Length: 332
Image 1: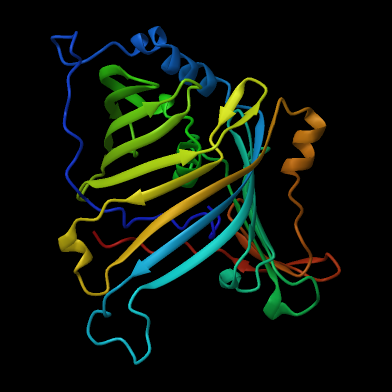
Image 2 (image 1 turned 30 degrees about the horizontal axis):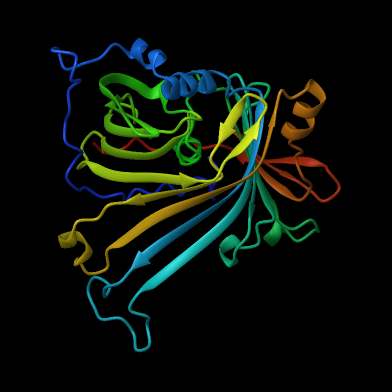
């Protein structure tokens, strides 16, 4: 996945999970998922999530690393800020149709390292990733291209899932069980488990408003061989397009116990998403334009389908550099 998009915040840390709750009207402790259709807010949530296809979303992502203690193994240098924050920013257009997905990702900060644009697409089968850098003849500033065979299965990347959740949509495809549904004023509160992440599970508490937007989510993520991580997702604003409604500003924050915050050198990350534009019901021509991925000149190409490394010069001529060497076996 794109380097800018693959900054998965693996530092979402553990705090006490939400209190388990059974449905007041269900002795078994679980509620049939179909009962979500009986509540106006959750019925809208279900209906909207089924229509999230053949669309394009343009949004900005802001990520932050916070560090407030000395590094492991030594003191901070003189003048190093006590509350250090590194912030990155990017603009992304994501286009989805069925099991096809295309990213166009543009860095908006000083951490770009000369990258003008990154694109990733599986339209047409092969998975292609292009990092666009300089457009001249300098090989030191060449672009990079990676081509991989088609995937055997399709699963949205975690970064896309987090983006959707921050805008209050696409929780329902992940719901495995429901333990309670309660109306609390203008909100409908749903508790249960998600079939997320892969090979893991997540306890959830969702607060859904009258538009079917999940305005707040408390998640406790259980992954194999990792301690549970508690995450709070909240959002504001509203954007309506056709039959779909999104929040426009979402935040994803870890809840960090005090004992963790006292660890020296411990970094904690959070994310912010700002929705700018949504296009639905894309025509074939609109879809073609949004997913068009051109191989640039002056680019190194790693083609895993042909199992070769190539270089495409500034005039568009390609030459084979050598074969792709198989990866060494992992030590287990």
